[in-house]
Image 1 (cartoon, rainbow, N blue to C red):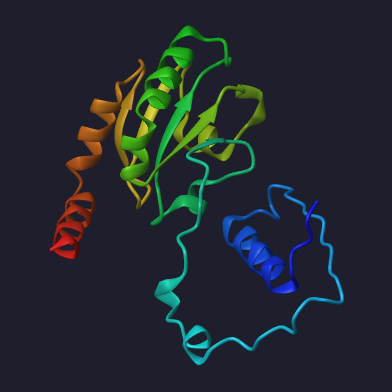
Image 2 (cartoon, rainbow, N blue to C red; image 1 turned 180 degrees about the vertical axis):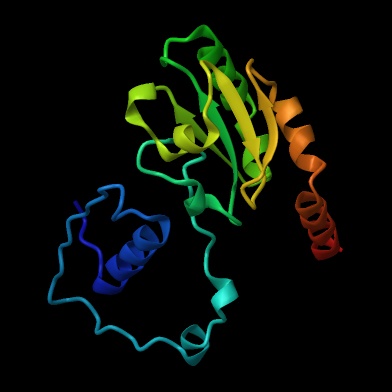
Length: 180
């Protein structure tokens, strides 16, 4: 393996930290040699970068309900919560196939899909939303329930319910203005 310079490794670790590499268990082997040039001081521009210039947090769009709460997503993402009694429930399988086939459309709408297939886990989502058997719940960024159905939904139905929200309409308007 060819060894990288110290500054190259610092860049790699900065990228991993930004992407959450430490949280995913990413590791690297460093080989530092005496030939490496001394580390350069960061430029004045780099030291004074505005906070808005930070990379957006990378979030796995499909998560388990175990160990997460609604508060974690309030004002940052729109939770779509999929409840089932078992991961083998045909309705759950159909819903997840629908979601994964058009995941890009949901990611574009700041959706995080929360799955709860273990009634015994007593997740905070199950306690607050009280599903009976299979259920899909689409929520707004403020935590209000937008749509609640006891059957699988298409991504089109989920997207339409989100696109009607005032905050989503404002986001679309702002994107159009930024594009101009």
